[in-house]
Image 1 (cartoon, rainbow, N blue to C red):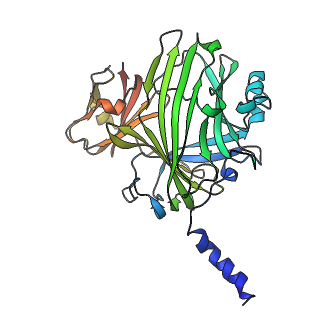
Image 2 (cartoon, helix red, strand yellow; image 1 turned 90 degrees about the horizontal axis):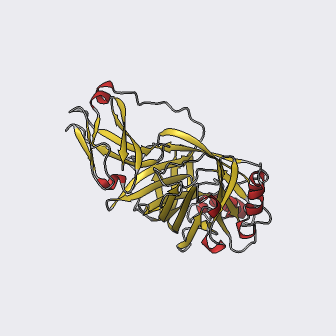
Image 3 (cartoon, rainbow, N blue to C red; image 1 turned 90 degrees about the vertical axis):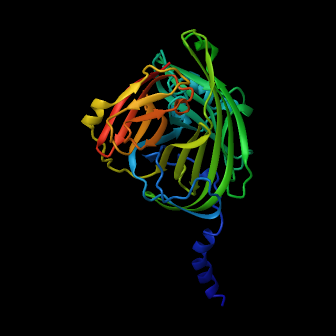
Length: 388
């Protein structure tokens, strides 16, 4: 019997591993053992497969099959040791380096600044980074948090930090499993007064993380034992440029449904939604993946392009917009992005009536230039609209 016991334990291990939630800790965050952690992510259509369960389904031992997701684009999210970036600038070194105190970072990632959609920067902004700190083993508290941002403005490196250590954006607290209680953080950052004449940006954020499910997730990348975290983001942004009066506005409530697995460093799948007109609307789908050759299925539809018109254009914030198109266009999807490609909304229509009404709630408080892409089975057409 003693000889058979190790055999029973080994054969039972896989089954045991699938009877409880994975426990996510610091070792499951971006790894820098090789110097750079490059993680490829595929972006899929915001229209979810009809075969998947509703996002509202939660609880233990769930099964989610997103294997039918098809990438429309890919990107690579990279993480480097913060010391690599801080070595390029004394400003970064003193802010996020060894003498940065509460702002000392361990990881940096080239990421766009959290500028509100539609905001047009009047100065050259390049080499943008977000700085993170991953708690050392045994340190208290155990978490992964954002400690600030950095960008080169007209060639000068400018660090942006949160107001205090207690007002940093805590992405995850560890250990994290289905049994963990919901937690939250309240963060605030603003650009330094030294560049106020060129521009000002601030963000007040309430982040709430709630583990609500665990189970088996399948995507085109593979099958994983996961714990799902629902992150609720409540943001208030303020922005001003060139010495003009600032504008503050609330961002529509955002939820991120994130499936986390051991050793994957980033969520295996993230589905982002926004609350639009009281409805939770999917605005983004992204999953961990390998390199795939993207085949562009959409070709320009000459008939649709000739007959597509937006009215009124320009239109006022808070008003509806009508897209007219050839009668009988058939089922179609309208995707709205700002000029840098950030998704504003995506909606499906019948299209046979020859028009589609986009209510004011679709655009929310967006102000600026938007690109509306209409996709049918015959191809696509795009129109530029202005919200003022």
